[in-house]
Image (cartoon, rainbow, N blue to C red; front, side):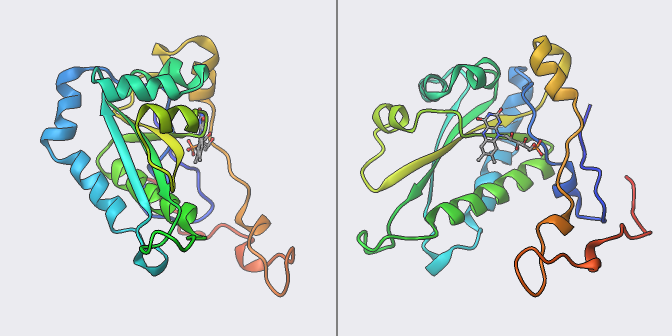
Length: 214
Ligand SMILES: Cc1cc2nc3c(=O)[nH]c(=O)nc-3n(C[C@H](O)[C@H](O)[C@H](O)COP(=O)(O)O)c2cc1C
């Protein structure tokens, strides 16, 4: 089952189809296509072409593939709840922000923002590759710094599971329920304002009529 967004307005496919599953496929042969068909390469290429303040590109990633040491180490940094499902993902990634600009001194106030943009690019490219990503704040940055030798001046921000998704019915009951629950969002009218903060606009009131279903 896929959980495409039930959007109020027509949006591009990759955004509509992106979602964060917990059931990941562990078929080795299938997973290997992610590397051999250059899907993983394209996903990081998408990260690479994100915009960033001063073009500082303050994103760094450490990736481990299932069964390798890095994957195991990243698993160890995860909170138990995330570990229980993320252990099956083809790849586990730590997304890291570089805290300073190119001079390695001046703080970069938008490093986190820019890292987020690069991960957003990755997630959309992954969707276009029929892959899924699941970002996680539930990990220990301290453990990641220690175990992955992340130097001063760099902040691990999220862990990411990446792979082909699998059936919700592989999951234990509690996670299965979440996996099968419809995705929800606040209406855009609630967060887009005109004139001043909090003032809503009628522009976003109605769903347009040419809404297209796949
Ligand atoms: C920065 C960030 C941290 C997140 N942390 C976790 C996490 O630790 N565990 C988890 O199961 N999901 C985590 N998520 C996934 C969100 O719960 C999920 O994106 C949100 O519910 C919307 O669902 P969707 O991505 O399927 O649209 C995180 C997402 C983001 C962007």
